[in-house]
Length: 560
Ligand SMILES: [Zn+2]
Ligand SMILES: [Zn+2]
Image (cartoon, rainbow, N blue to C red; front, side):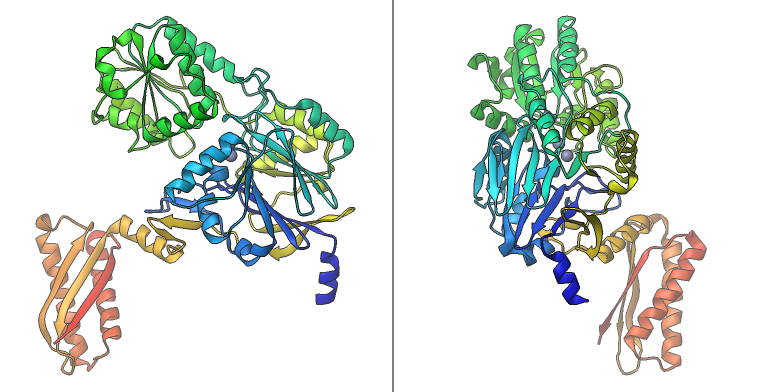
């Protein structure tokens, strides 16, 4: 059996998604052929509501660490967090070169600086081919909501693999550089074995509008306004930021920038030439805006997702040093809430209205377009690339499923479509492709403060319990040999009830514990583990009957 397996492995390519499936986030895919591996993207994701106290979520790198000497490099499609966010954490584990376009690597470099590490970063441009072991990776221009995005055609010993990266089809992108359709059509003619394609918007019919639409909406808003304009957007969407600056200039306004990530990314984008400032005096310091009349000012800020510490949230809460929202201000949220952020965004919008601002958000005007392809655009890519096999990526299960339905509607056989889970392995050979029984570890790894991976399911379960019903601590000093209570028991609680208003409850709980301890002593129970269990049981039942709550109960005994 072993020998056969090894033989099968000969000349076989393994494709392993370590993240990005059944989720929108932490995209990372591994290609492995004999003694060589390449990694496509290395992203992080943000925690969901159940992940108490978790800052960010990383892919599991254990398979990569185990195979570190095989890895020839990481190839990045673009600079979004869900594609580059885990790079610093990977580079702390293994030293590998990282390939990407200038803007992508500029953003990576900023991250590495924050983590105090140096990377081996290798810039590639659209049209270039990089040879990494047996893999020849061709970088092809695509359009997305960040500049300098790529799709990848990867020549492998068993055939061509095409990865769309994140994309939408924008015929009129801000930088005038549309997708390289000629090359895609050519690839289709040359023959593509397997295509991996972005599924984010597979459920949406029709087409995603061009970034140009946002520009037109901005123009019409600016044209009709004498107010001070404050616009929140994703800092990474440098084309959007460019559009805002251009529109400001067109209407004789100056631009101030607020928010750390907006300032960092804008500086980088200006330095690398992705954002052009027509004249230096256009940009004004955020602390000098008082001197500028309202109708001559635009403030670009972070916080379009309602992030609590962001500049926009601070403005909305009247807690921003330089910007106090006044009646008549025009605030534009140039984004749609990422699923899960709707509540926080709504809170910010409410606060802004309360402060007297006019607020424009995507429900009431076209001030945001998605960066991902809708159904009709996906059909075009499938038709151009005409892959033999197809694997939908970048989406929750519903998105992957819907994308598979689209592929089938174009004539692809169901058997040729592979919907995987993170950690599943796809085996490809020249005439066969199948799902392996091998599973690679791919559970989410949580980052909390400086700890990476030290918070697991047990800690999270405790945090959930604590968050739901709080904590009760029982403290008692006990004479070990006799079991006599010397002092206490005392009851301390946090997040359970407000003690001052519930003194009776706490006192009767204390008496219940005392009686139970006495009973233990009478029955000759001296084992502290057993006594603690008895207290937990007693208190749990007592509190449940009185309050219908289940706090975490923590008995602490001190020996005297
Ligand atoms: Zn993206
Ligand atoms: Zn993405």
